[in-house]
Length: 368
Image (cartoon, rainbow, N blue to C red; front, side, top):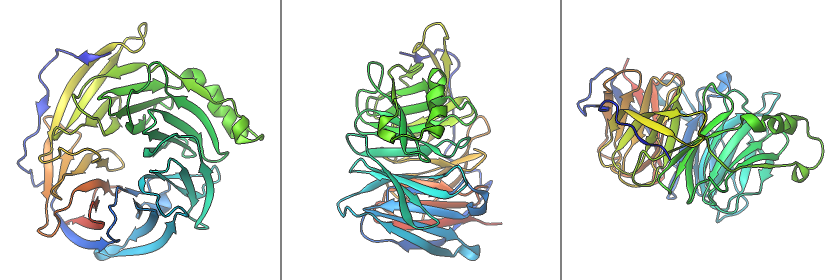
């Protein structure tokens, strides 16, 4: 288990906004009374960079951001299970480029929605409990990974419907897995975190033949030789409470818990001793009143900045490519008082969306 290294003191950002970029509210929508838990722009297909989706209750809704702050509703998918409560969504695509939306939540079934036909493409059953996060492999966008309350992470091929790998077992998480992310350039690597207060880094390198086989498999998906990955290559104890969001920033990791900050750290693995190593905490990005769990941050396409909401309906926008951290903007509106569960930054960061506990969506645009 990697403990925090002694290195230099981390650089802590100041909460005085730099005013590098100012934003104003240009729209707000109310989907209904049910909480909205996730919101995401489509970064998988350049034709649809201005399209985003939300999930709340048993509904997935797709929108487009138009000029002048307008938002158009494109389509909505209502799950057949009225008791379903979706917690997460991710954009993906088939090997022919067909855009898909992948959603999961309380009933543990992953729905792959073909946004061209507005119909279910596939449903994945396998997780034994609710699904807290789904992420897409940007280098191979027909691969998605899911993090579950059942203490496992699963890798799926949405083209063939196969569960390729299950990250769980002897070295796996010991409580709900809340977040997972693919490394942006190392196709074999993922990071996961959860209620056992740890972040675990896993490698698929020795199992990659199964990933490749999943694309050419012609038998029933249930007959595929799904493999268990029982041991992560690195385990980090950076936080002393639930870790509910982690994202790669190059080879570094951004993670947050319920202690009012995002932490940037470097895992220093030792090749000869898998699972062991040191953590060098590099920077801290304070986020006041961010002390409830299941609040997720988002970044723009090039990871220049990150936006995170808090339980009072405020958004903090941090610059990621500088040290010490610079707060670009602090966004608040007198009528936005509900906890923000997730934000979505547009491709260039000029639009920031937030989805709230009260069922509202807020759009902020940079003042040019």
